[in-house]
Length: 141
Image (cartoon, rainbow, N blue to C red; front, side, top):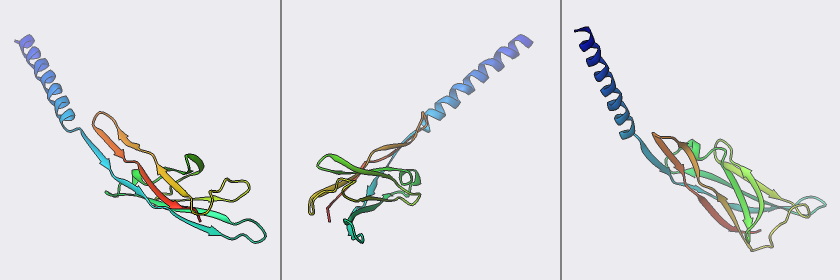
């Protein structure tokens, strides 16, 4: 009788594990947070030197997902060439300053693009949280 009792306990334990695994897989989900960034451009006059172009913005997420806002890499480009990069603050703010002649600055009125690439905020068997791509354009000052 003892052997039969142990066998029954083993079968019940194994079936419990299968049920628990099935419940874990059924509870898995995918979440995509829509993110966007703003972009503004200003020109700052430096005393005795060339003026600095300042590009700044803020990355936001529609569902206030902080993983989609903080520490995102923002890349500023002009005609496909990278002008500079910055990481967003905890609040999503970023800023890139370009001062000639050390930095390449686009001509006044040319289009400048800020891009934030897609990020996997959480990626495992139970969760797939994706922060979407965000882009913004403006004219060089």
